[in-house]
Length: 302
Ligand code: CP
Image (cartoon, rainbow, N blue to C red; front, side):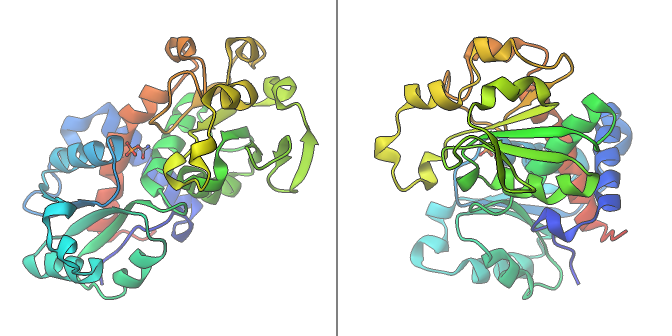
């Protein structure tokens, strides 16, 4: 049976830590760990737009020696009505070893995975529910900075309702005894995720409490009332302004999965501050995806 990676919740804390160690080892010494999957084939099916995930999976494949094959959905038989299941069964029949899929539909990959025998499926972003490779690169960024994954106070700031990045991160963060909070357009203040209690209405006064502030983009493509979105108002209520930024812990880090809207989730001037890890996340993403691909292709289940 092929090993799939559809969600973080199917892994455990030990596997997660091993994946992080592998990712950081790849990052430190790519040359020694490259081309371990030579002569294998990877297919990339992005049925929703992507820059970071698609390009870094592609780079990860090349570093591992996998040959890459891109399905342009609009020019494929999906456009004639062929189902995603049949598309993937055809790729498996051709000898593809691993397929990375991004899609809007939720739970469909789980159903399809049951039909596959030799080809691994890797979720590259699924509706609002799953984005495991993003969660792994986020965990790598956190571990690299703090040298630990536990005992951290973490704030999700932004549109958690539509965010698969949020969904995947809150699958691993509780394994390590972290305290999780959020502020979003749907909460009336700072919410303790674990107790579901509102701590205060003025979240910005509590900023100095957090080790990690993970900002999330307003996901307009998944929002029912996107016509009424007011970027200036959003920035005023949920944005990390320079003024709010003055009130942070010295070791705190700011993360964002990208893409971001300039001067909406945060003042763009802050981007070059050393505590902003946005491009470091992208950098580590290539190596996190190498370790995920090795994990499914080597059928490792610790
Ligand atoms: N973070 C993320 O998933 O970015 P892309 O949509 O560009 O892949």
